[in-house]
Length: 413
Image 1: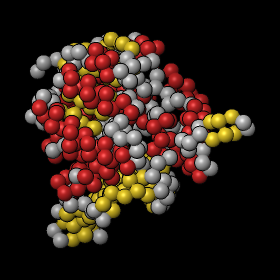
Image 2: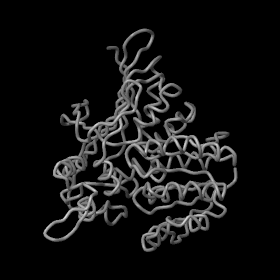
Image 3: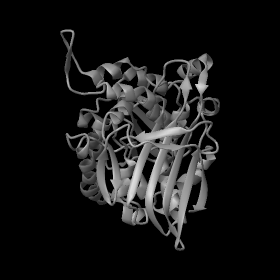
Image 4: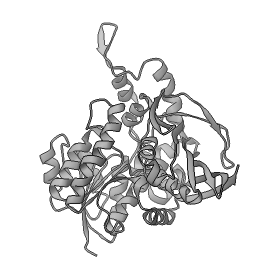
């Protein structure tokens, strides 16, 4: 097996985690870490053995192509608007491609245009990657990504599927004001948008922070209210319902946690609006003011240690798939519960937050499969929920080695 050269674009929490893990992989010869923030690149590279760093302006396609010369894989951990440039660069240098999400760069409408953009990637870019014999996978973090593999795994226990719920509760709370443990800009953007749901075989939009559903699983110390949240999964499951989800007719993503509790009153007060407003004689964009006022997610060990040393109020959460359908003519509920280290355990294990551990390593496992040639003859562009079941099994086996596990409960209704 030939050693691989990997370009990691973006030095946020996700890109940092992937780079650190790839540095430990025996099949990786070299990692190129690139970002517009050269200081962040230098700090990351200083912690790695196989890496070198470079500054890169992802607004410039040629700059990305220059960074990507000779690489086998490009991991895109940049904000969503850079997706098209990075995809085009991967095609130009004939590299495999991995993206934590699905780009918003294909349509100016960030809501309905985002769905059109995802379809565009499948329709236009998949043939292009097939033509060069390479694979591109989008939606490869924890959600989407890990949760999509866990949802596909639930399909093993059903003959037909009617409804899928993806529930995520991020209940980690520090004594320090830290509402988000990953990109605040991306999180708040998602929270300010209508939520895509798949209902009765059609993709529709629901208001954010609405349609509450309460859950308390046996390992949770409280009942949690989950709300609508804009996310990839219902779109992906809806587009792939017949082939990959046993004919599913309804799919929902429901979210809860510290970040949602922080953002909901801001949304209702109009403080997540993107339109310029005048306040005391000055024109401001409320969304920009809020994002600029929220502390950045910690990504380096000394930052995380400071927060833990100050005190953690709550270190809880859940990621649950509920899939309703039929098995042998009977109504069945399949629950897949994903378990992973919390912030304290993740820091002790790997010097990371729990969010970095789950999302970064959830993403890294897709990278690991690339560098280990586990995708074999797969080519084209797919989302993470479209992996063949044997690849899902391989992914979850790798996850288990990192103490990220899936517990399945099958219940007759």
